[in-house]
Structures are given as structure tokens and as C-alpha cells.
Length: 142
Image 1 (cartoon, rainbow, N blue to C red):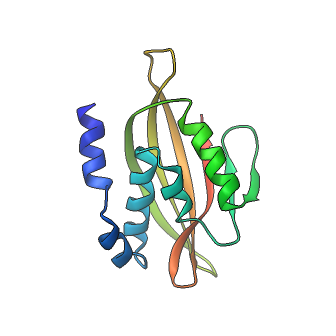
Image 2: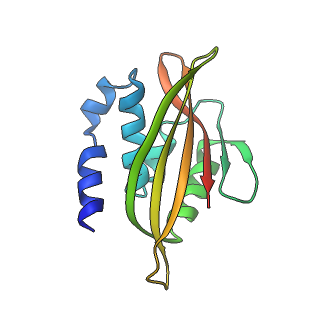
């Protein structure tokens, strides 16, 4: 639990700081990773690409999903257990037009009714859209 608190302290960004970092890839990724760590589906959705997001939680890719659909899917995913830890592991620009990047976190959860933690990697595809980095893809590797 102490690890989760430490990670949240590093990842959490007040709204004013998040707004200042909107054009900053690292700032956007920190914000999304912090929202993921808190199970904040609405927060993650605020960072989505306007055309929607493709999400793969292990059952095949769905999307592009609207904000409402993505929020419902993420809430369902977060409700399956308790977040124990989130560690940001990778963030890399990959180029292209529009510019693209990907980031990854290791998400440790404890499924409801168990004491056994489960580690999963979550990849976020980001694109530079209309002057800001936006999440266009979320992929959960089990």
C-alpha cells in the first residue's frame, strides 16, 4: 500500500499543472497513469482522442469507442478488483504524421475475493492531435 501511495504522489497532478502540461508528452502520460492508478475512468476519458479510442482488454480490440462507451468499459475493468500498484515503465515517441508515442505501465491488481496480486501491462497509444497529446489506444496485456 505504501508503494501505491508513493506512485500516486509522483503521478498525481493538480488540474492547473495538468492544463499547463497539455502539450507535454511526459505530462500527459503522467496524468493518464495517475488517473489509471486511481481507477478514474472519467479522468482517463478526458484525455482521449476526439475520434474515439480503441480498447483491447484481452477479448479483442473494440472501437473506436466514444467517451461514454470507453468510460463504461473502463469502470467495469476498474471494478473487477483493487489497484495495488501502478509503475510507469516506458514512454517513447515513435514519430509519424501525426506524431505518435506509446507509454506503458505495470498495473498490479488484487481481483475481488482473492489475496493474490495479478500483474498486467497496460499500453497507451498517444497521438498529437490539435495541439495536445491524446490517447487513441489502450491495450491490456494479461
